[in-house]
Length: 456
Image 1: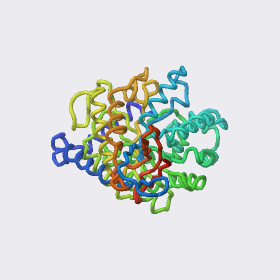
Image 2: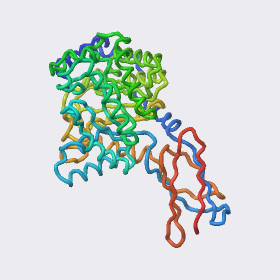
Image 3: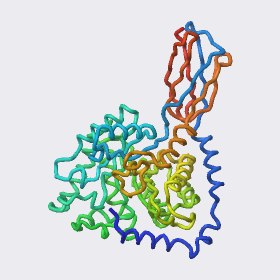
Image 4: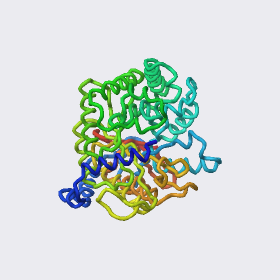
């Protein structure tokens, strides 16, 4: 975990990049209203596609005046959260596990699995893969995409204590083996990975191997190393992962990019350097929780997305967990205290901006329940699994506002509509009360013409 000292450093750097007054700092920013309006326009433009449905009779003749129910059943965009509790022991009863699963599947189509080396392989040679595999199978049965986090990290969570009992060159060989065996071993089950985590803000791999002390302060060294030095240890990790599964989606994850321009610029430079070296990087991981009490100015969020979109890679919001506890809101854009209601309001802004930017492909809320929250007070559910306002807000966005559900009547043999990308169920009710159902997918960048031939 990052300590209070490191958090103080983050705030100090943020202050350095900010002006002496919040008013001066924000006076040239676009307003939240302007950006939300732009995001909503983009949602209509980029998150939806035109669909034509052709209806024919049993003998192939066009049919008109047929009532059709069209209901979207899942999103193309990935809305996710961590599923650590199903792989651990915080859900103490079958009833709790059932409730957890119900509330998770109601919102999310992506689940993040824990691969922190220190916990995943606490004893060398005995990784905890069985439980992860079991939960991953459940996810696939529910239509949930699985993602692993992370494979390489110089935080103490990514460098188990036993690693320091062996020579450094052997430790690096084990890192290579760990990446290959997990990416290859979970192929088809987990095909999205945060391969390297927080490389811009942490020490190099070889430096981490010189730090057996289980204190993280020395492992965070913002702006200390050159981009070339960072790329030297990051690049092989992606090549190993790609060799293990050429079809895997390999993400580089980082924090501080929105609030700290220096981090944003260095991360941008690192991605460019990795691309120059032909590293098989397939996505950008944008954390959105450092500094942890800051309510981001929406213009800073949009500016970051616009800059990163120049890299030509999909953007993933990987870790988002704003507070609901009554701490002072920081950052200068919003005043007051965090609360369950403010947590929901901030989240609504962030999700709208993300869904409204065409380069963003996923958004992950990090803490799902307060039973296993990394930042206490930041989860969507209380310890008893009751929903906070933020959960209800996401339900409204994901399952209502951003989901297509309509009833249409064929004009001649054709129905046309514009719907959100994803999977659909189309049903027709016959006069005798029976229903016939069809499944289709509204796919981006494709002419979506769905043909229905009735059985009666």
